[in-house]
Length: 325
Ligand code: SAH
Image 1: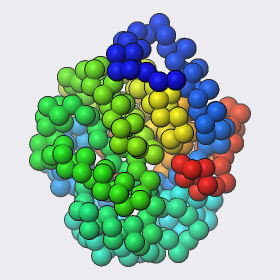
Image 2: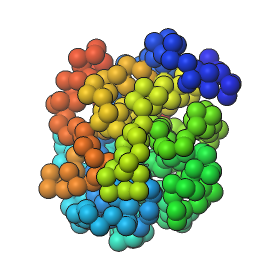
Image 3: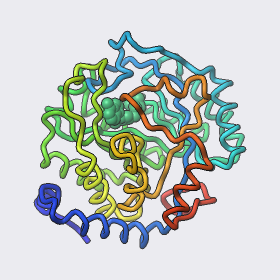
């Protein structure tokens, strides 16, 4: 099944076709990646950030936040515990924090790759040389959402950033042989349905292996504090269409979906998603990575297993690469 941009727009605008779309995405998911759900252990190791993204609670001008940075050795031991619990992929996420220089990151990556796991990084925009060094140390995958492909909106949302550089990052990561993840926010102020269709086509065009889609959630300590939250159903539709068009990619049921709908994780898993990312950050810090308020983190592996089994799905024992290895 392939849709033109106009067909994508029509589907996004017409809610009478939602059940058909969600069932189709569930079928495409089953046929292409099966019933296994991959669990990724997420470590949010620093909430210090030099960026000023208008929507994000970690933005540098926000003074009303308790900043933390986990020591490199502690990041490694946090990952070790997660691998002992059975996680086959560790995801390291942070703000854009320059403390974690190329050398510091390489040390962390090498330490974690001593354990039996795949490693994903999600630490923002870096140089080609940094990405190459991380890959050489054993990093397998990299997540960097494009956030929106609408250049004008991108500029408004990211005051000190450059759309072309973000695309450059995605291309460099592909060139270096990473499995590459991207994605978008749904429901940013002034975002159009047309641009969401472009976002989906962009994921396909750059050959993304993983796609995370979540609704925008207004954070009280940001310039967007009075804006309306994104719409859960629209975010779910963007995710479902992404599954239908990109077929065998890995798609997480995002925390933002669960935050807006108490059943969001399960609904997402039944509308195209095949990945869940429980939070395994040391407890002391786990509530402080507040990109948006009331973040509904899942931190208990048993709870994740229970949810997944309750809908007739199984937990993957593999590393969860796109190629099913
Ligand atoms: N510094 C890294 C990680 C950013 S946090 C990077 O630049 O890639 C991970 C994701 O959280 C972001 O890519 C963004 O899409 C999402 N996010 C940030 N603020 C949000 C908000 N207010 N509502 C919903 N999602 C948000």
